[in-house]
Image 1: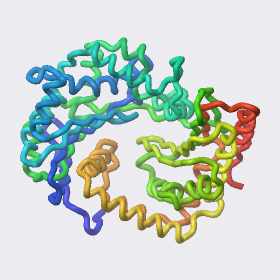
Image 2: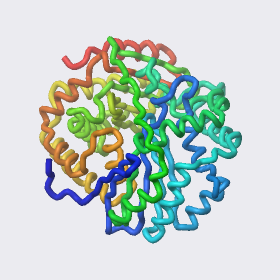
Image 3: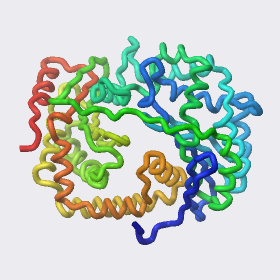
Image 4: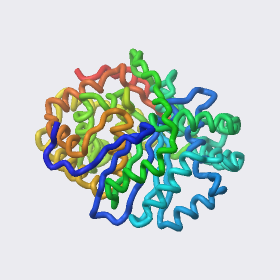
Length: 434
């Protein structure tokens, strides 16, 4: 379907099957090249948990011609660029941003780094990653990161509940053959999307892709089973942790990224938490003074999603804040937002979608993510779909979410003097909108 005023972009498929998307932003002065890969903890098993993240670290450790991590970084930085990498639950991104005049040489180096890693200095990198893992543990080595623990609560038997980094024992067990096998399984043309954005010429970019990335093997797409939603009632987990506040997560199983309900999910998030004048912050902080900060986010996967409410609260207020969050969502499920709220959300959505064209990183991610997960759309099409969402659809979306069999609550802190029992009463007594 044609959408008015769509900005130009091009999609091509190389001989090896690698999909390439080019989104020129001629007003910018830097070029961006990024490879998006289906890799991450949801594609792992208990013995390999953390391998995707560890492999991310190892990719920039050297090639046959640039033998050390220092040489790799020096080569890119000498061209005015900088390397970036990140591993998420279900995808990884590897990118380089550089001046437009060096994009050809940058692309050549980048293709070599991604296709021909030597995986040198494995033991050194194990130590670095184990230091990173410590950030999520307490003094006794227990997992206390609220985001990690909430996913374990929601997905107790599915890899979506794994931590991205794994644990020290697993990381220490990784060896060169495992890295090579994981690299071959995931870093291939069928399992990846290459994106060019910023100050790039589409014809030149596609020629560079063919020249520098055709070395990637064809491979096959990596698939995984969808999580089963067999939850029957609310779940609660209280993790004792000596801290000044309790980290609270109130989570609802939501909708997948490609769901027909995704536009309503987008706009519901703006009703809930898109600035300090929206419902969540106004109710919890401004109006009732229950905590310093509170937020909400949507974490979407190709076959599921999670609506997260998060807050750092006084230990003794954990049950009260939980109840207020539940009542807020139920209010929306019963009455929906006002027309004024929706009008404001539409305006803010339009402003934000325009700003994507100011960022080569954001624009590359938008297009590449759509291609990678078979849900491609343009920013203009996303904006049109979101703008069409009505207050009635938002009420229905809130009603779909605010159900006992979707609720998972996690508290990491010190719930004393009966606060744990009060929190359990709130969670297990949740009946949804009535």
